[in-house]
Image 1 (cartoon, rainbow, N blue to C red):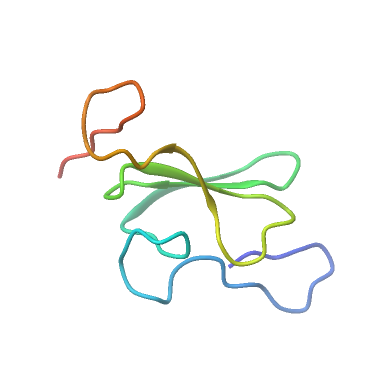
Image 2 (cartoon, rainbow, N blue to C red; image 1 turned 30 degrees about the horizontal axis):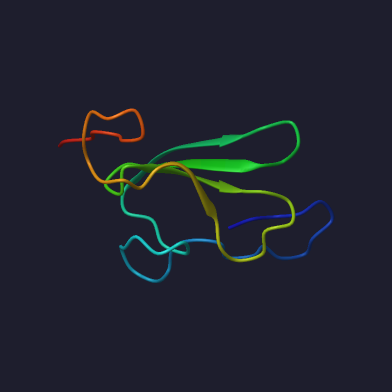
Length: 81
């Protein structure tokens, strides 16, 4: 859920649609961070990516790193169970 200052209810930005790799889905999120501008970052481990939701984003995030499959390349993450 994403909450804006003064909101009476949150906005569903990811989840509730099953596991997957769409911009509205996560697959085993492992970490969350909010910066001083209110931008939300989520480490989406099985999808090997980091997602970002800015203040203007309504319902889908942006992949800021990863999403190039599992591996050891400069633009890849490698998460194994």
